[in-house]
Every structure is written in C-alpha cells, then in structure tokens.
Length: 321
Image (tube, rainbow, N blue to C red; front, side, top):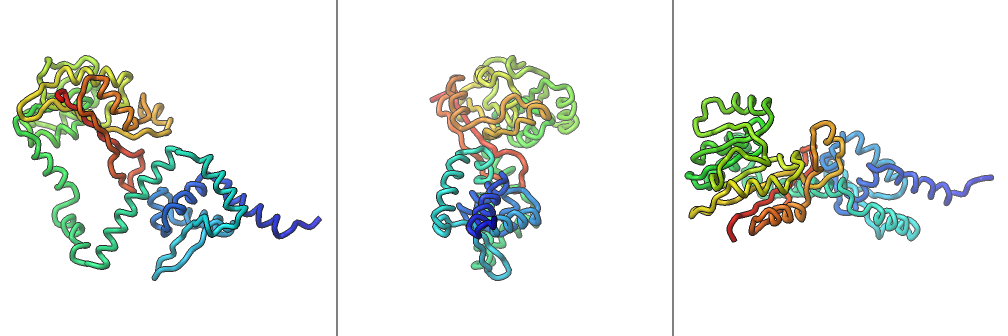
C-alpha cells in the first residue's frame, strides 16, 4: 500500500524530535534567534555537528532560517507551525520541564547574548565597543577582579577552608594581614606550599573542615571555594566556620561560599569524589541560616560560555544582624 505524503511528513517531523540534543536545540531557538556559531558555544559542540542537527530539524519542518549579511540565523516560532505540530511541541515542552541541562543551556545563552550586545556596540560605536579588547591586550583579562580584592580591609585575617593548591590564598595574601589555609589532603597542601613559596603572611595548616585547627573568634572571614560539595556534612562545616569567625568594627564575621549550582553530572562522584552535586540558592540560604548566619544571600554567577562545567553560585552569611 502506498503511504500518503501526509504520513511521510508526519514521520519525518516526529523523527526529528527523537534526540535529546535536538530537543535542547529547539528550546534554545524557541527563546532566541541564533547563528550556528552561537548555538555551538551554548551547546559546546563543533559547528559541523550543530549544522547537521539544524538540517534535520529544518527538514522536519521545525525551524526556519534567514540570512543577515554573511550570517545565517535560525529560529523556531510556535506560531509558524501547523496546528498538529504545535500541539505535539507543547506536549514535548511540558515533558522537558526544568531539566538541569536546559538550565545550563539558558545560562550559557545569556552569556552569549551579552557578548552579542558588546559586538553590537562595537558595530555602532567602534571606540566604546573595542575598549575591553584594548584593555585586555594591554593588561590581561584578570586585573580588574584582582584589583577589587583591595576593597577588603587590610587588617583582616581570612581563612581559606579547603584551600587545595592555594589559588585563593595566593589572591588574598597581598591585600590582607594574614591568610590561614586549611586542607586535609597532604598532596594538596604540598602543592599549596610549593605555589606560595615564601609568602610570609600565609599560614598553611593540615586539618579537617569539621574540626578546624583554629581558636574561637580568630578570623574575620572564611572562604569555601569549590569545597563544600566535597564535605559529607556541609551544615557542620558552616557551623565550624561560624565558630572561628569574629565580629569586628570593620564589618568582619562573614562566610563566603563559592560552589556549583545543582546539576546531574553523577559521574563527578566517581571521577572527582564529589559528595553533593552542587547546591541551589535555596539550599545554600538554608544551610547558612541553619548554621547561625544572618543576612544569608545567594546568587548564580554569570556563566562563561566556553566553560565546560556546571554553572557557579556564590553565597554569603554574617555572624551579626
């Protein structure tokens, strides 16, 4: 029996949805019109792979494209679909829900769009748009963040908890009176000692984050930089950090947590020894408040579209109200 053209079209359209990568791509194009290069950066795929998946979706009648100068832009508009396809997509979109991978895509998309706006400024106001590139070529890319560390009170003592190889201590040492770097891994401590060399104001100590080798009220700030996801009991680690913090006239008594947002990369448990797969803003707020911190706050950081890991989140809490 001959198949009808309508049946063939329906089969082609449904087949195009039969891969997770293409579903992610459609969610992106539903949110924004994008070029192949922009999609490749968000999804972290080669442009050739993206082009193949775009062709499948275009052949299935899901997306449209247009040219703008030398660029080809792709879009997915619900209103452009026929009634049947629109109904199918609404069901598929509902089933996708708030998947963590889609959340990561949205964060990378926001970063790519932010860079696009800078490119537009370059086009419409060349001097202003080029200024960041001029500064970077002259001075590098990290000097602004490093210079802002000088806003910290110079008399502070800061605890770098789970110091690893010492990169946080290295940044803090030039701008505060003292850094106490703590880790329980002998290998990490050896790397930190080699890195920090003769830095006189860094005190490197071996210790457990649940039983810190410090006296009560002995530091002004405590930093957990990509550390808390390794700790079996984050609440206990935060309570211990609160114990060693002191409140001072210069606004001390603050804990800062930098970690990954919640994700589903379960392989991190085996490959890197992660106990927790990141934290939501709500979870960090609850952990800080439960440990006795006031004015707890958490916010996701802007994603770097070239970064391959989960998004990052920063949270703070204070021992005074």
